[in-house]
Length: 323
Image 1 (cartoon, one colour):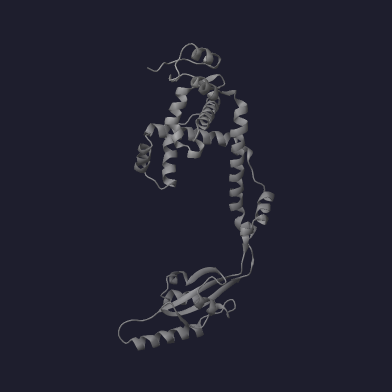
Image 2 (tube, one colour):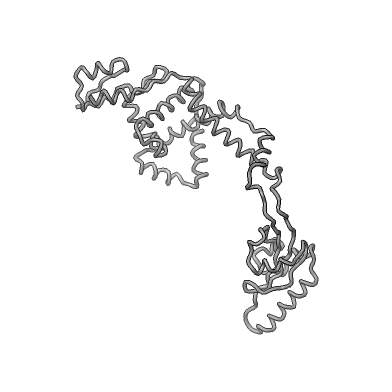
């Protein structure tokens, strides 16, 4: 029969020496304390059975790591308590709904996953309550201390080679598909005449309207606009058609992809660099998130432990229990 022994740090050796057998599970043995509040082996085992299951495998692969996580959880709880922070059931429910939406999951999927882990809805709900509170604490303690300056954005832009751009072309397309059915030769001739007439008559401003009226291609509704391509990245037929064109010109009709094609070289984009103003918001978001991650890590690893008196005794308890 398991013996339930209270084992504060100062009496652990005495209690074990007093006659507890090597097989005794000291569920009330104190394995850590935070600001004088005890964390027992029973607490640790409960944490391992429930909340630790939500942690990445590499973060819970040893008992010491699991105790470290439990201690950090308790420090956060004390921060919430000292700061008078609460998370209502409604707030937690909204947060869970957002998580499910972002992960494209249903509540049924979530319940099935929890069941596979041997967990219940209450375990998950309370874990999410802690997450809501943690995010509120981060916003209070971290977000207010993080900012990104225009100079930092410009330096990041200048140092990032991914913003270098090769020479590119913007092209539009009229596609006249091969006819089928009776009188095929007459239809082929009519198609060739239409293509020749379009080539001779169309200009920069009239190409899009003609594409909407005549093209059988999938981008007809968009004026035949195909997009912007790096030179050399299109099919050999298309590359050949635009190779001799200047900006604004239209290629002679050519056969490709089961039809007649006309290509409009809408615009040439020379080799250069993405404009800073086009990506400054994106860079700012990235730098802000990186700074938030760094500042939060410092808060968790350095600031939080300095605010609390923490003592961990798992090694001592395990050593005494082994004796």
